Length: 498
Ligand code: BES
Ligand code: ZN
Ligand code: ZN
Image (cartoon, rainbow, N blue to C red; front, side, top):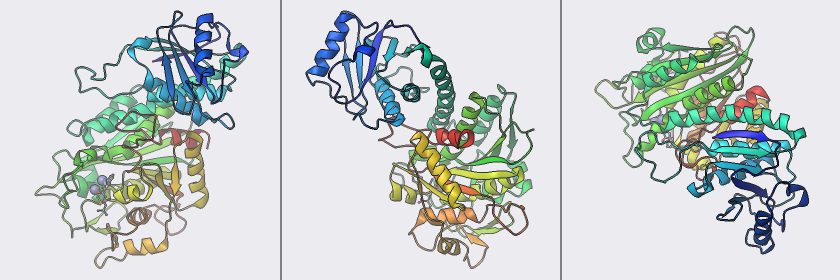
């Protein structure tokens, strides 16, 4: 897609017209450049009540003498937000068919620049499909590049252009996260993720990628990462992204769960829907995608990303339930279920984060089925050791319409995860209740203190369980299917504006 901003009144190609519910005819100040026949056609449909402009609806009028039209519903008049505009833009993009051609002009009626940009953002986010493995697109969609002109006044053009530019960069990060998540697990394994990160970093002067391979991880004492990944012929690794690393001072550190396939290991998962466990590296994809969004938008601050990559396989040399391991932090972990593996790789990632003098640490993980039971596909579970920071992330999510719902980090859950008879911690709760909370409480044991190895205050940390939101979120209309790329936008907002 090529999105441009234009102060020209002409309508090129198909006209896209976002409309507020209850509009009965085109207002005069929106008529500029509209051919008479188009105007009459639209007014007939609106006046006759054939298009009510309900949120996320579209009506396509094709074959008119002056060209095609897509009417786009924004919903009820009072309080239409940027989120409504973004959703409308995505709905319009989803409705485009071959007959609409490849040229489009969006004409807004009385919308602010932020709203116009959000509509464009929705179109850009929805402009994604993963068909690397198809010879032919079976939806019969036209793959040629679409030209989209956003019509606006001269006064609006500058600001709109820079917002569109920013959203284009962020959408690239979202799409990268989706690409990584959607890639089949025979082609997406720890080393492949590392190779892609390595290649990716070459295009930016201000980004460095370091790969800690299996031997180095073993030597460094990354017992969690090793325990999860050693049963696979695709060996585990840790991939570290550093942006603007020469800048002095504290910085955000993002940590991702990157299980490129989760069979459950020796505690093997049931067969139904096991294919979906290719998305179990969604946390790492979020970190990589956020780095891309920040790099694309020219972020000047220091940011670090740590992705913990492993494939969880059953094998003769795989970790067993009953094994006790020791990770980077020096704490021992009794492994009671090898399917609770995300928290093991993260225990090393979180501890490693302490080396980078974090202002705060945020981890992302498709961590628990229990989180999906609690929140469905509508919200990410959000835990933090700092109430104010949890609110900041919640607010950043709301600012971009990616809901992260506060969940409790209770002392009772921590007690449950630290009362192993044989080790410092256990990777499974005592019962099955509150499984998303006990997982978060386990992770907290591996968040370093501000003075790293010394006693004292813990580094500000938040955990985001994206098990329900990274894929399968049918009400998320920014994406057709597969990986959503959720929270790249939240994190970009938090880091640059939050
Ligand atoms: N990757 C899964 C979590 C998951 C399950 C995400 C379903 C999305 C959908 C994770 O590694 C896992 O298997 N967790 C177990 C933990 C349990 C053994 C304590 C779970 O949720 O059942
Ligand atoms: Zn698992
Ligand atoms: Zn998993």
